Length: 96
Image (cartoon, rainbow, N blue to C red):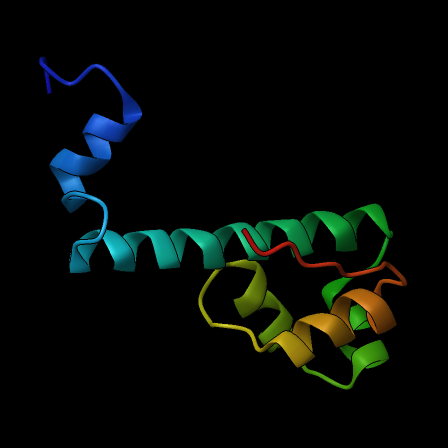
């Protein structure tokens, strides 16, 4: 660790270079976690409980909890329903 100077070097050391199987898995799980955190922040800023969001969107509180904690993957249709129907926000995608 002494010779590691950047976060990228840390990731290379711990998970392998970009494109490696272990690194791809780490980055995928990181994105799932970030999506859950964004959902949680939107829900809280909308002053809704997990139960209220679940009831409004026809899902279960336990599922909302798993999403927010990065424990499950989410389908785009479900994400759309939670954001647009449940939280009254607009969902947009940018593909680079």
